[in-house]
Image 1 (cartoon, rainbow, N blue to C red):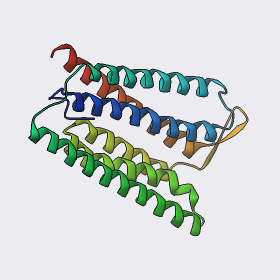
Image 2 (cartoon, rainbow, N blue to C red):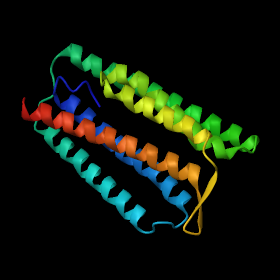
Image 3 (cartoon, rainbow, N blue to C red):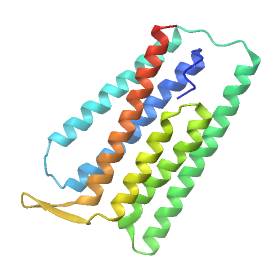
Image 4 (cartoon, rainbow, N blue to C red):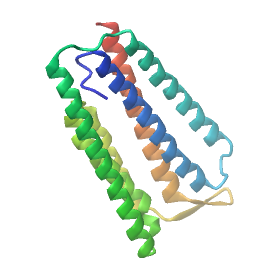
Length: 201
């Protein structure tokens, strides 16, 4: 979750944090899809999600280990750069949380909680655009666009659908697994990109 061009300890640590964030929040979205499936394809969805989460978690820990072997930069400009990055990231992340909280309150008050998850997907997608510039990671734009598109499509999906005699929450399954897959692929891309940089360093 850094520019991935200057592989100092801070840069690799930032990438490892990025993979871990994508892993954790991808698992949360997957849980929404699993709950919405209402025991359909049980327990394979849970097993699949658990395996992906575990593999990405191991990948992030591997990057943390790689980062320990690197030295911290003594360049004052780089230190100041990372301080600014951390502050701005905290601001973006905080605003995202506030937006989701406000959305939750409004959806509950208006009794329209069915639109909560697609709106959250759009909020999460939008938050990737400033992060793309902040961390200089261009593919964050792709992640943001996909999440926003998934959220918009979900508005037009039927709430429920019946498959093999099981009535599932179709919108939750779609947005849950769609968002999870998007975040997991983003985490995998961060990991692969960072490892390539480390191997050519």
